[in-house]
Image 1 (cartoon, rainbow, N blue to C red):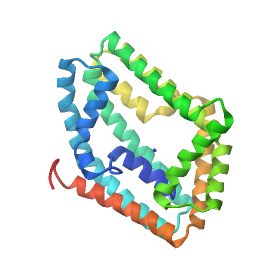
Image 2 (cartoon, one colour; image 1 turned 120 degrees about the horizontal axis):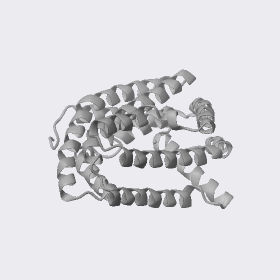
Image 3 (cartoon, one colour; image 1 turned 90 degrees about the horizontal axis):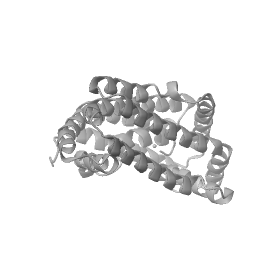
Image 4 (tube, rainbow, N blue to C red; image 1 turned 60 degrees about the vertical axis):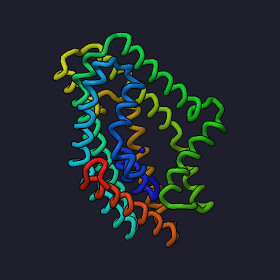
Length: 287
């Protein structure tokens, strides 16, 4: 949600949405995965499952036709930028595009699912809250431990893995730079988690309050398209600071890339762009 850092920002975000970071077969079967995830979170009854299935299939078709071509173009541009050397303007471009694509993706998904979400009964909403709490507990244990050393070790490990995924092996100096960034922006991890919890509460509250599908679709879409409306001033301030610092880190690391690392970044972005282009141009199950 990555790695030379334009890769980190663009590929990580866009590919997470497109599932291009997995195999082409995985994307072809993403609608099945989405149905499985929906069932695990929402505890749907048979009628609701039957109603949701074609909606997910249509959403998948929309995503393939409308979003994947955009991802392919963005990733091709990211690859070219990475080959030439990443600038602060490139980072800003990547952040803006990832944010735009994610919000469009999420708002469309919420709108399409709203007719089913509006039928959820109180026990199903309670099950959804339980699932959120369960996942939050796992996240807290892994990344927000009260043990300072353990918490920092896990947060740094995750960040290093993201950069290595795109740039390959990192030098000790590069790892040290990333480590300093992670340590300096540790507060942001906690604030982002608190923001996630707030979003979950607002999401469930909207499902409880609004039973009209059209109005629920509008409310949920707004939650994704304008998240700043519900965010705390502290989070907005720290998130902007984190974004600026990450941009500086990315540009700094880009200058330190070896020819081998840069080739690795360019190849990864190009491969992802090709995956997205191929997937956009074929029907599910085609060879």
